[in-house]
Image (cartoon, rainbow, N blue to C red; front, top):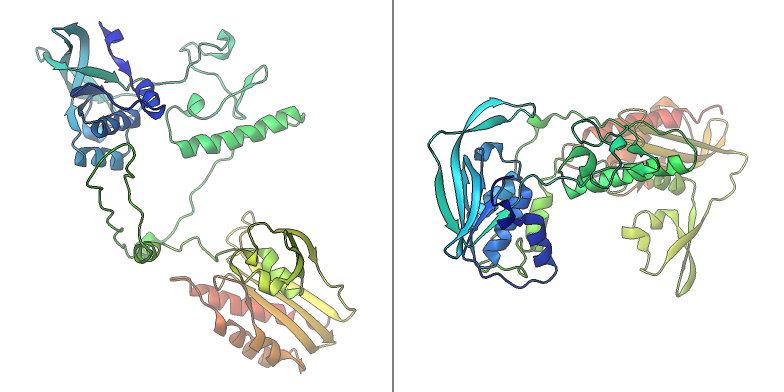
Length: 425
């Protein structure tokens, strides 16, 4: 700490008070000490309360841990920044908070990779503020934990399964340090799984190491984002980012890379149930109804009303002459989502196809029932010549997303294999 630090308010406590209903403050000029997201949040809230906040940070803007987008928005809103500035003492004098600071210069990088700020000799100066809010050095409160759970540096000792000891688990900021809400939610899900294993007497599973899938980004043309106008009036009750209209939403959605999207619902079940001529039993306040799988999986939300639930799936008993085949193409065996899939159920007499149901997945926003291809193969023998024509006709109804046209060729090849596999079973 620094002399007079008790005169500084906590950034988190300030935000909590505003969120709990505090209407305003009497300050005009406020110093916010720190360079993280809490400091930015405090400063932007202060702007909305009618004050002139100034952020003091001991490194340069390039080293600020706050999100860059948040920093830019703070600048646009009028937040002031004083970089390479370090408070060294605080005192109350003449009705204001006097903050004594020193200028800093950057030295060699520390263990985190960021350059160490060093005080510049003889650069001390003093500034007066109505209030000083500290938003630096926030960390988890470990004071309630027994000493045996802490290392020599006072940090939490933890296993890869989130287990600390004596029925204590930890995750989120306690383990990784300050991060985002999304990271905290993800950690909560993982630690819940570890707790479940612990209570069930199972061995703890090691943490999964996530990997990035490489994509050919150079083949993608950049499209500019929709420019969202900043509201002319700022306030705690005013939305910072106004909603987009339908035209803007459509344009923004068109920026999607499509590199990982194979369909609206990349479902094996949809393709299989449609090929099997399945039926979905639905129960709601208006009673029970039966929906054919073909209709259920080609309507948004399955055509379910808000008070309806699926209670049963019916699949007709296969006949003795029925042959079934399901194929799917995927990037790796550990990934269940199909790039494309093919499902066929056919009534066969040796190599003669009496009737067929052919369904394709992943080549359109919804599964496709290839009705023209079904008619073409009906009453014909499964031979190389007819199979090629049927496969070509089946994919004629494909609606691939942009840059996903390769799926059509994969589907055509898989469909040929699926049809030929029906012979002689």
